[in-house]
Image 1 (spheres, rainbow, N blue to C red):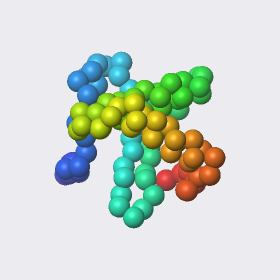
Image 2: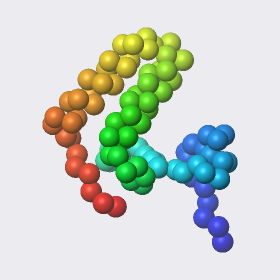
Image 3: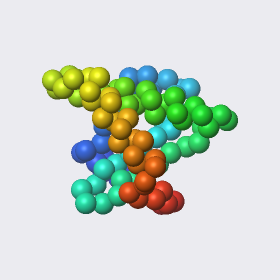
Image 4: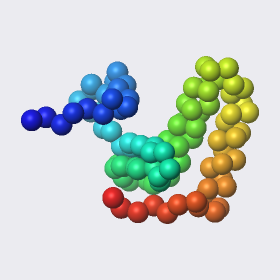
Amino acid sequence: MLPKKNKNALPPPPNAKNPAALEILRVWAIPNEAQQVSLKSTWEEPGAWGLMLADIARHAAKAYAMEGRNEADTLARILHFLQAELVAPTDEARPL
């Protein structure tokens, strides 16, 4: 029997159908628990994760802008919390 799909899962983006596409990050937020992260260290250069995280921050700011928030203010807030979390983590990364 196939496992049931989680109704809260996001659909893959259209280009995920490309045979060369590779899922590298999946994050689940669970109320009152630490987030769950699965990732694949796919790049030889670890700095590439910085580029990806910057892209994700911009995508998130644009998503909030589509809901009526100011995109620049939202991006600044995301970056503020990112820096604060890097300096003083509220949770530690542990293998699942």
